[in-house]
Length: 372
Image 1 (spheres, one colour):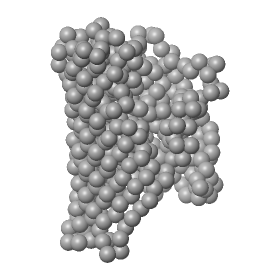
Image 2 (cartoon, helix red, strand yellow):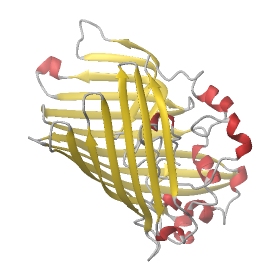
Image 3 (spheres, one colour):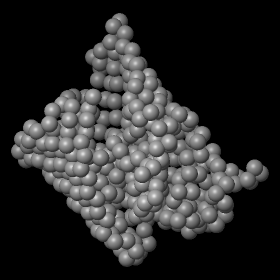
């Protein structure tokens, strides 16, 4: 489960010895993670051009405050900082990424830092799918996704390939006041998808989605803070004929990290090993609306975070819009700069959306994080 796409299916017990912690087979993880090597890159920053630098290799790319993309991929980053040249608080970032080493992804972000306390970003991104990612989503979620079930009436998902192009535009900001920090992100996604059903038959539709995410951190004491938050991403709720002839309105992200709740969104201390992929938003592509609050206690050597949130399907059926409640407790103890002990406990109580078909979901994780 990840990226706002909740699943209650279990991994076959016969396969558990053959898979990694994010559900991939060992062979796929070996191939996709380049021998499990997460980062390897070269950075060039000429002395005579201190405002410019280039970084190329496998590295983490983040778009839209991680809500569109947060993933380790091969690619290059170009950064220009006009503050070095003209004392003007403007930065330009350009990323060229090979998603899964096949599909080009372009990202441009303009950052205005008008003071140490206020920052605003404008970003745009464009993705050309060359690995049939959209077809894989539809196949893997055919029993669950509204969009998949609609399309299955007209096409054979098993033999499906696709040509798809997705784009995102958005704004984000960070603002610091005396004892309050505010962060926000808003984005719109537009896409053009052609499903190749047979060599002579194509099926075409557009995608359009909206996202808004914000949190307000209130510092009550030096080590103690509260963070109310709100996350919204649009969903699809229209009849099949309208989808067939028009636009799917569920927000689509590539490899997002939505750090709101641990079970529904697949975040938490183990977020680096949680499975994330391109997906529609919410269960059944219905979108998600999540108000909640997190409490932080951060003494010098450990970190404790508790979260409670309620999750809704903004495009769900009448009387069946409530995904449920979720509560999380995250703990990190820092032995030294190289070694952390991590633990988390999570509970998800299903709501009316699931028609009593789902029971209480829970997870408990302990581990160590070794930094080299």
